[in-house]
Length: 95
Image (cartoon, rainbow, N blue to C red):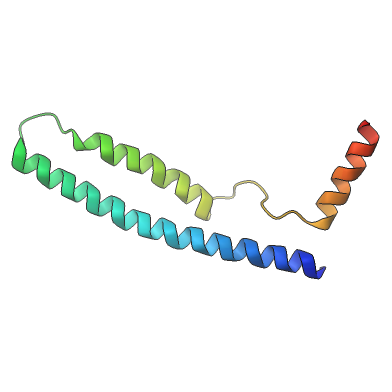
Protein backbone atom coordinates (compact mmCIF):
# COMPACT_ATOMS: atom_id res chain seq x y z
CA UNK A 1 0.00 0.00 0.00
CA UNK A 2 1.32 3.44 -0.89
CA UNK A 3 2.29 5.87 1.84
CA UNK A 4 -0.47 8.32 0.87
CA UNK A 5 -3.06 5.55 1.22
CA UNK A 6 -1.64 4.61 4.63
CA UNK A 7 -1.81 8.26 5.68
CA UNK A 8 -5.40 8.51 4.48
CA UNK A 9 -6.37 5.35 6.39
CA UNK A 10 -4.62 6.66 9.50
CA UNK A 11 -6.48 9.99 9.29
CA UNK A 12 -9.77 8.15 8.77
CA UNK A 13 -9.07 5.95 11.81
CA UNK A 14 -8.30 9.02 13.94
CA UNK A 15 -11.53 10.70 12.80
CA UNK A 16 -13.55 7.57 13.50
CA UNK A 17 -12.10 7.22 17.02
CA UNK A 18 -12.86 10.88 17.69
CA UNK A 19 -16.46 10.37 16.49
CA UNK A 20 -16.82 7.35 18.77
CA UNK A 21 -15.59 9.36 21.75
CA UNK A 22 -17.98 12.22 20.94
CA UNK A 23 -20.87 9.73 20.60
CA UNK A 24 -20.20 8.34 24.08
CA UNK A 25 -20.11 11.88 25.49
CA UNK A 26 -23.38 12.70 23.74
CA UNK A 27 -25.03 9.62 25.27
CA UNK A 28 -24.07 10.88 28.73
CA UNK A 29 -25.48 14.35 27.98
CA UNK A 30 -28.64 12.82 26.52
CA UNK A 31 -29.19 10.70 29.64
CA UNK A 32 -28.55 13.67 31.94
CA UNK A 33 -30.86 16.04 30.04
CA UNK A 34 -33.57 13.37 29.81
CA UNK A 35 -33.41 12.72 33.55
CA UNK A 36 -33.37 16.44 34.39
CA UNK A 37 -36.38 17.22 32.18
CA UNK A 38 -38.27 14.23 33.55
CA UNK A 39 -37.64 15.38 37.14
CA UNK A 40 -38.80 18.91 36.27
CA UNK A 41 -41.93 17.49 34.65
CA UNK A 42 -42.60 15.28 37.67
CA UNK A 43 -42.20 18.15 40.14
CA UNK A 44 -44.16 20.69 38.09
CA UNK A 45 -47.09 18.67 36.75
CA UNK A 46 -46.91 14.89 37.05
CA UNK A 47 -50.51 14.39 35.92
CA UNK A 48 -50.16 16.37 32.68
CA UNK A 49 -48.83 15.44 29.26
CA UNK A 50 -45.25 14.12 29.35
CA UNK A 51 -43.73 17.01 27.38
CA UNK A 52 -40.06 15.95 27.86
CA UNK A 53 -40.67 13.29 25.22
CA UNK A 54 -40.06 15.92 22.53
CA UNK A 55 -36.56 16.76 23.77
CA UNK A 56 -35.76 13.11 24.50
CA UNK A 57 -36.94 12.05 21.04
CA UNK A 58 -35.14 14.89 19.27
CA UNK A 59 -31.89 14.10 21.01
CA UNK A 60 -32.46 10.43 20.22
CA UNK A 61 -32.61 11.21 16.51
CA UNK A 62 -29.36 13.13 16.86
CA UNK A 63 -27.81 10.20 18.75
CA UNK A 64 -28.81 7.84 15.94
CA UNK A 65 -27.04 9.93 13.32
CA UNK A 66 -23.98 10.30 15.53
CA UNK A 67 -23.95 6.52 16.01
CA UNK A 68 -24.03 6.01 12.23
CA UNK A 69 -21.09 8.38 11.86
CA UNK A 70 -19.11 6.73 14.67
CA UNK A 71 -19.92 3.02 14.32
CA UNK A 72 -22.05 2.50 11.23
CA UNK A 73 -20.75 1.09 7.98
CA UNK A 74 -21.59 4.27 6.07
CA UNK A 75 -20.05 5.16 2.77
CA UNK A 76 -16.45 4.54 1.91
CA UNK A 77 -14.73 7.59 3.35
CA UNK A 78 -11.14 6.93 2.34
CA UNK A 79 -10.36 7.88 -1.25
CA UNK A 80 -7.40 5.92 -2.58
CA UNK A 81 -5.25 6.51 -5.64
CA UNK A 82 -6.98 3.55 -7.29
CA UNK A 83 -10.35 5.25 -6.76
CA UNK A 84 -9.06 8.43 -8.39
CA UNK A 85 -7.59 6.50 -11.34
CA UNK A 86 -10.88 4.63 -11.84
CA UNK A 87 -12.83 7.89 -11.81
CA UNK A 88 -10.45 9.47 -14.34
CA UNK A 89 -10.91 6.49 -16.65
CA UNK A 90 -14.68 6.66 -16.28
CA UNK A 91 -14.66 10.36 -17.16
CA UNK A 92 -12.44 9.72 -20.18
CA UNK A 93 -14.87 7.10 -21.50
CA UNK A 94 -17.86 9.34 -20.85
CA UNK A 95 -16.47 12.52 -22.41
